[in-house]
Amino acid sequence: MEFPMHWLIILVVVLILFGGRKIPELMRGLGEGVRGFKEGMSGQGNKANPPAQSASAEKPAPAEEKPQA
Image 1 (cartoon, rainbow, N blue to C red):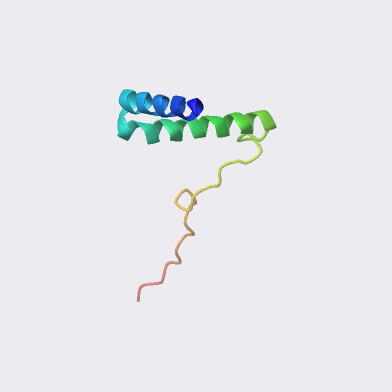
Image 2: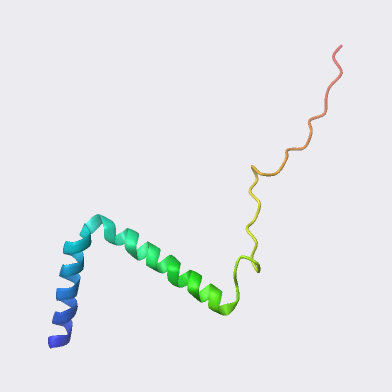
């Protein structure tokens, strides 16, 4: 029963050091780092999946001008 007690102590220490608000930010950054590492190791970088162009980046079609009478 000693093993779960170690994890509880580590959790309390992390909570004291970083606080409740900072932990989700740390975990999100860690997850993004691991995801980027896995993509880099598998060879699927930005080169394989170029970012899609957003609708705002595209030029709108020119509007037809109506003759004024």
